[in-house]
Length: 465
Image (cartoon, one colour):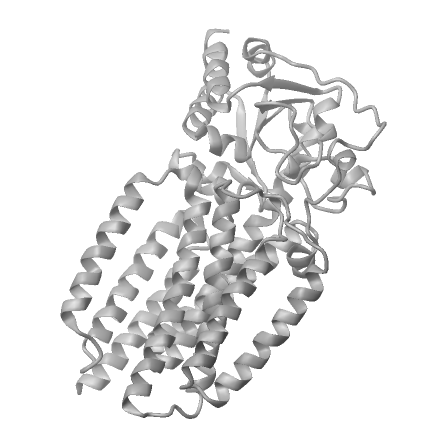
């Protein structure tokens, strides 16, 4: 077998491992195996690529591995689970940046060699620059919103849609001319600048509550950029892996849009969250009622006499890093013969699967995690629903108030439980900026404070009851 055949065979093996790895990621029980299979596939693809003669300078490769490995290792050790959405956004951005840099290196080397690309290569260069540039700056804006370096609410300005439309037309024109003259450095630089600006302007009008969808979409973009780069480099492993990431990201984006009962266009251009003060407060002149505050000791009485409990995790649990305390509480309840499950909303938190990741880190059994459609019919028969920092995904206005911005969005129907305990720091509305009438219902009891501290006190109270 020649070296060329061996390289292509290695790419085939890597592609199979990518596909099997992605398939295993569909279940929490096999997700770890899926990650391992995909990692082995990527290792095989990298080693095979390094076998191609004349492709690399091994000194630079080793230096890059050392520097990148150190940065990645330190980051992995220091990053908090609550900061994982920001980390995912940054990684998406790095993928886009890599695509732009590779396209730039390819253009530079061809200019030096006087080798004008033909066939699919010019289009691939254009796609790498456009998608990669949009992914880079769009991901950085998403990171800034999640990290609260800039406000999470939509940023709007006069004639915004018209300016974006003109910018999009200019970008399309730059793509066309660069495709016709792929070695023109000025056109290349122009497209890079337009793509970077387009990424910023497309993401700033998106509200913080829509960040899970945006992260999924940007992840798809990074995959499509990698696929385009694969065509630039004539690397089939990169084409396949990029296609898988792009396709799976788009599917996840569609699933999450369906979970919010909104179209992708509405997420991208609807400026959801830019509501006026009266809307955020629940409507001017509308008497929301009175919220009833309880203590963990008060709640322990009801918990101890319950037969079934459903825990609804939200971003408040993530911020307080309360997942381990929550697991200890649920273990205590289970030891007392109480049935305990977790209700998982598809867009709870700040990234796809955010709550699943946190609960898995706390070793919560997979079988206790129940998806929204399956858990909702159980709430009317449930004694206690415990809401941990969730707001928008448990808002009954989505069912009851046609004037609400989230009307029609599928939510966890916690208000149908016999008793509802909501742990929050304050009465402030959630990331969507909308007040929640759940807090004022007769069967709802508020426990104010840090989620971790409250859950620990509740656990101690249940043990001592």
